[in-house]
Amino acid sequence: QVQLVESGGGLVQTGGSLRLSCAASGRTFSNYAMGWFRQAPGKERELVAAISWHGGSRFYADSVKGRFTCSRDNAKNTVYLQMNSLNTEDTAVYYCAAKYYILTRYYPADDYDYWGQGTQVTVSS
View (cartoon, rainbow, N blue to C red):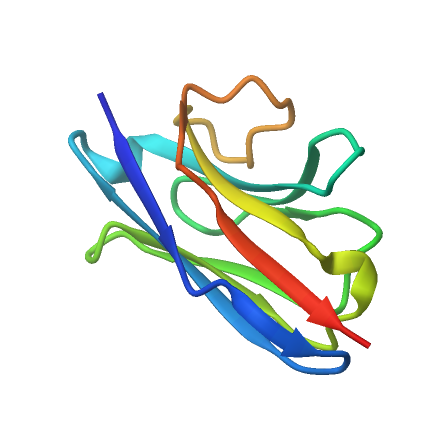
């Protein structure tokens, strides 16, 4: 089992920034590719960013490319999502997820093995 706990969500004005963190425990963190998803009310869950186990391969959804940066620190068992230039369309519950995946690229699908409880991000206009 892998336990994931997100933090860093909150209320921010348009144009502002937030940094989400996801702390993992329970298994060898470096065996897992990580992903950040979000779900807004009435919308489907969306993969926002993904990162390989070593951090060298990353994916970003077109909607966040150039504004969000995903990184990880395997020594701290933590993955981050730096979110800049936020707008109201970014309002959602953000979830981190882990997939046992030791290939060199990020995990390209959405069937991750473990999920955090989510953290709310609200961007006001």
